Image (cartoon, rainbow, N blue to C red; front, side, top):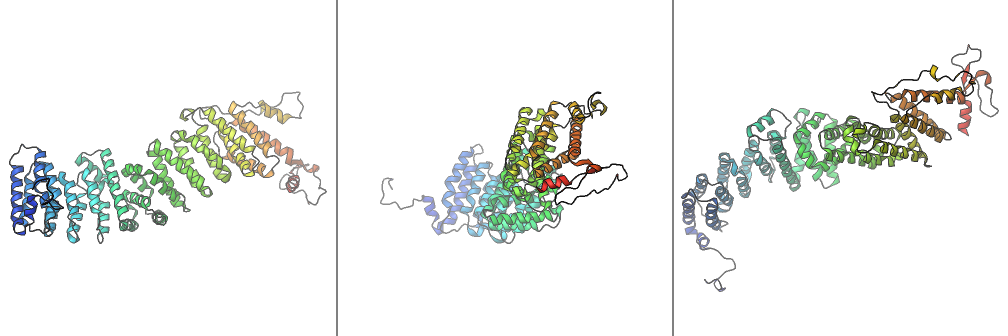
Length: 607
């Protein structure tokens, strides 16, 4: 009819060939004739371009799609595959395969599935189209099971670019009844997910694959798995069940940790995240997850971890906050290994995550602070650029306990007073910032801030007076420190202290110590804290400035003697209600032994 006429046209337009194919008596013979003509057209001229072959396929096969009733024989299906095998142009083969699910009869689906699997072995380059066709065949039961089992067995030998599509098809619903078999098959046959070893080495050598290509493929594989988990809740449950069923730590593989990470990141409900966290803690607590598994996972699947790094930080942080030391140590090792092996961007993310742990979970800040201290000690150069970030934690030191304050301040000072070449800015500027911060804390009227200032000041002093191995460090000779002849005995100790010469850092440290002692003198609790922390840094420090130590030692002796040491003959009972008497442990045979007078200190404390 005329194109401008609306009288003889229906709502849907069909070509003449399709109209004839709808006639049951003509369908079978006409379909076979069309296939024969297609074969003649695309095989007759070996020099024709692939565009011309694709054009003939698109012209002849589409009218055969979705016919209301089909009367296509086995010969029709066989002819289709004969054409695919015979045609030399790959693009034409792809085009025919894409049409197969729409043109065959339902009774031919199983036969076609088997033919497609054989075709994939014959020509692997057709795999993408074949898998798409298999998916569109709507296979079920044993046919679908056989296809998926064959795909699982092929994972070990297939080219890299096919594996993501294989995994996606294997996990595609329906998988009920065989889900455990498929998951365990993927865990065992997906050798590129295994730790570096003979299987992976042989695979890469056989295909000439590089580490970068393997990493890129792994990222695509786990993206497919993640999509499958989001689409199928039962798959997530099955993955968790299969991982928790492993009864020997040697049977766990790097893929297990990453699968748990994906389950945690895809769980929208907090309760489901808790289930994954609980299962992971159980694996760690009972010894099924060893630290060696972390090393293998980072080595084999480092690219996948980087791709999902923000999710990884949240997942490992949930383990770090565990009250179980075994679990928190596992998380610390995970963070430490990532920090050691990954680049600056990821290291910065780890530091920020640990800082957030300290701020948010300040009642259990020790695991994060211990880890920051460990990273600073082992990787000072990598941690140095993040010093300004870490120093922000000094704003919340009043919320921390004594040990945690010491740990944080030690972390800051290791960098600030360490190798100046490792610092992002002038060390003097950073050291002055720390000096001003502790002075500000000491002048704060709030008791928690003031006490934290005492601890921070003494930890700062510890690093200010620490000598490097190549620096001269000798104790001043006692004879050289005696006052000159003719001086009166009064003030002798002060003269000795004044005669000790310190370098600039130690002199500044001594001035800071005097400031702390003066600030705490009127507060007995803070004064005791000061002496307690001073004794701690003396006992725990290596290679402190011996001249500084000598000067402090003499000053402490003078303080003790002036305030608490008296001769026994000088003791007299007080007139108040406190009963006091001389008690001797040693030196009772001396004519006038010295005694430690604690009664005055007790009275002062009670007042």
